[in-house]
Image 1 (tube, one colour):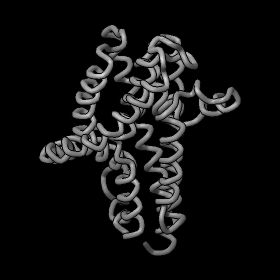
Image 2: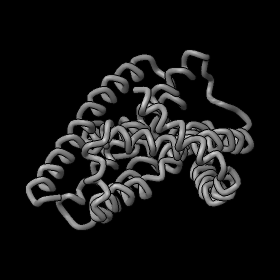
Image 3: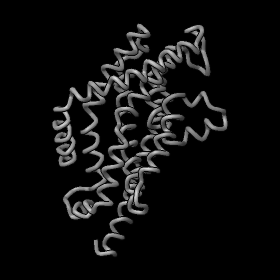
Image 4: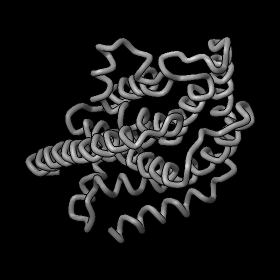
Length: 263
């Protein structure tokens, strides 16, 4: 684990040199948040009105958290890097390296987006408080639990995107698969909670990556429940194993093909 922490730390220190670029990137993120804040303020004629179990403040905080998790992940960059490694043959040099390529990719990527996440987290909380003048009622245990769930959600998302990137072993370019995945997550996972969809769709979405990567952390933030916390953690652990298994399976299959074809 020390070598992966070193990889994470190296990427973290490298990206600390680009704090100003990250801050300027928040402008587009803020404009998106501003649009959603006004949209939900318009939909809720009465701020205390409940729509599918959410009042206006809860709905706005939900969108802020989901956009924070998805907007700071930089999934396109990760998918493109892995795809280029496969297509360019760079991945062949990693086969005999003293580390697991999958965890190397995860550690490196998390290190590159941690600074962005921390900055966006602070600015997002300030933006939400500026508009709503209040935070959800949470104690210290609730906050720690949400951070754990949020951290696991980022790892699972990174593994799933890594799996999509490794599709380049089979097809020439995995970008279309990432495009479909990103639109699925954006439309169904960040803008609306699962409760906003028909009952038949809710049962499907609760088994999808949306439940463990975006809905879970946001739901706990706006309406913390110990019962929901346990369910989400169990689902995240299962998804963590599944995502890593799929990445390992795809990687081994790809490496085998490389060896058969002489690299």
